[in-house]
Image 1 (cartoon, helix red, strand yellow):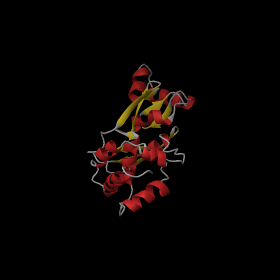
Image 2 (cartoon, helix red, strand yellow):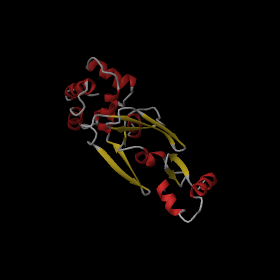
Image 3 (cartoon, helix red, strand yellow):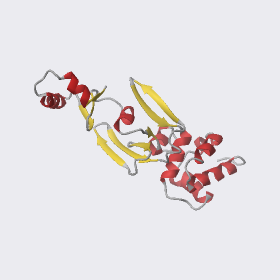
Image 4 (cartoon, helix red, strand yellow):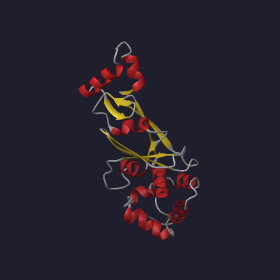
Length: 198
């Protein structure tokens, strides 16, 4: 269960040394510090369940979401999340995993994000299509569709069948929200994809 420092101060309001009591409970393992002012009571809580509480607003995306959906073969152990208007990447190393937060455009942020409730936690994760768009946005600009194909299928090793199952209309809609060369090339690739099998 997520606990804030405010919750603990209320819980231990009758103690003369509230901070001392909290420190003793942390030492005993009752509360596991996550980030400043935020604690977890269960050491076995999956890290993804805590992702939306650490820094936000945010949602799981980029490499972690692509791995989660089985679109890339490499196991991803770092939780990668999208934010907006934060200006710089934030990294938190916690007992539950490493979390990296980086911006997408505000115009793209609210689309295709799913809220998931699990064991009384709520976390947010991009759809397959949104995760791919976020990932392409985060990379250096490419010079054409040919290079995008190489990036997708050789470098990122996106599963060909998974790519073929993506919702083209959704991808085109999402791509228009980024003002990114890479997403422009993705739209062109989708036009080609309509007449070819990947």
